[in-house]
Image (cartoon, rainbow, N blue to C red; front, top):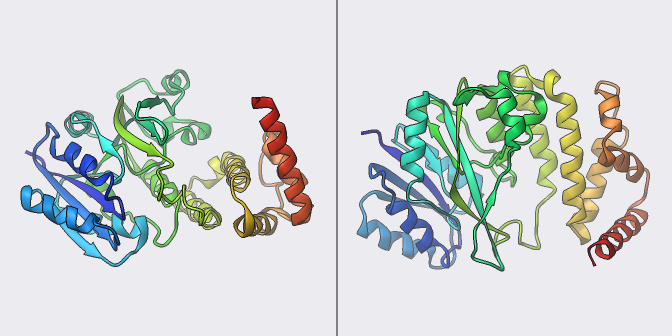
Length: 335
């Protein structure tokens, strides 16, 4: 039977780790190698991992100094011995059928990776909500088989895909040389680009097998130190991936549109020094940019592009006033 390596990066998740590990060990697919990378936790996470390793010999624990999520995942990839690999974040959990059903799918379709749907677990509720991230009507307009590849799809559908490393099963030989960019958040973005562009076959299962905790206290997104400025470097790395695979010209306008939307959204939820840094980087990267290489007819239809062209001509104090006005308008609209 094929062995599947499940890579679990662990950092200060003592309140969630039991649930995560129990759902992995209860999988109906039994030939597992569970690689838990303790990434310098300062709580009891490391102790919990060692207890589980004594209980079940499928668990392999690696302790390392803190390298961030990307570094922990890379360590797991290098240690994996399975024919297939899967990533599970240690504050999340999975359905007991996830591994078996995704393994069956990837084998039957001979795909490079398979993805599934997710359920969201919000911090104020334990009731799962299915996250249908893909417009299935649009998806099945182009996908007529149990699998597809990048060449089958229009550029805009790429940006409807869920870029997370989790909620997927990968053939190890396919991803063994791919790595997450160290020291940066949003590390899934270029990793998924590599997988999507390189894959000859991508299969799918729209059942929600993965349960993702939204805005967990202590998570990177929840933290006051958001490090959102990393998104500028991540975008450049992703653009480099598209160029490497000779796909940048095909995707460049869609990439620009999504980059602008992403930056506007992220800068709107930051504050203080982080927001100021984001604003200055936005002006530097997009203020004097020559947009003539893109499809301007398409970009001009985007409200976020028009907003960008307006705010890059402001100073930071005026920008803050604009953002505050928009927040007040949004509050009144939701009242």
